[in-house]
Image (cartoon, rainbow, N blue to C red):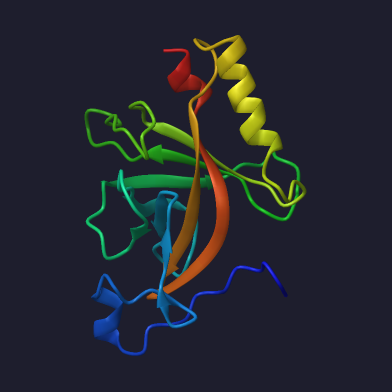
Length: 178
């Protein structure tokens, strides 16, 4: 259908899975002006503390997996149970800390923190409601509103990339109120 996003294709051989340029969509290297978040899941795609995150975010031009990641981290990825079932899952991302506890890093141009929210929306096809709500909140109450940014989300497990769609990456309320 017109306007539909293409789906990811599987790498042809094992060595392609390690090649940063191996992610293609309809024969073209996947690229986006939005930051690209790659969530690599261990154990056949199970959510939990054994996930890793790579963020591709250039200041100029399109982002691709051929770029050097702007951020990498080990994370605990959990599905949010309090979100309504709208076709796209909302996720909590928490940095996996060592003995000293979780570190704090900046992701996709957002302030440093150790917890984020990945919010998807299929009911709002134009993707305006949540983005507008964050912007209005920052205008009315800048000190109490999480920073947010649209991004493209990909899952990687067993060498296969799956395009999840456009999400809003936002600071968690815990990081805002610290």
